[in-house]
Amino acid sequence: MKIPIKYGLLTALGLIIWVLAAHTLVANAQSPVHALLGPVFFNVLHFVMIFLGIKALERERGEKLSFKEALKTGVSIAFVFALTASLFFVCVIYFVGDTWLAIETGATTTPRRLLWIQAF
Image (cartoon, rainbow, N blue to C red; front, side, top):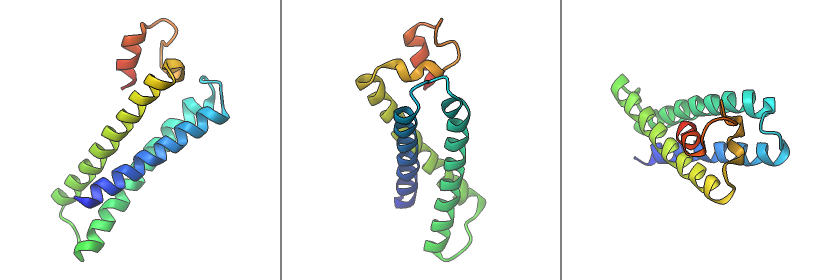
């Protein structure tokens, strides 16, 4: 269980660093950095960390994992990442407010509570 936690938290750390750096360096929430590069970075990071986590478990066990074990490990990493990222964004909304959600579709016309739910 250590590997899913380790790689899930590392993935969340990558997301947190990206979000904080992107919003610090690029103030415009409608910028392509936020709209295009962010989702690409998050998905590539997530897939790479799942791959590395599965490979680490294979090295630890000294044998190739079955499909079921690899799937279970990947889902565990994704769950730890999702939980940690959600907690981070709850803290962002609590401390910073919803100004970072301006990139969401319909942010100007959607009620705030609904926008928060859609963002998660």
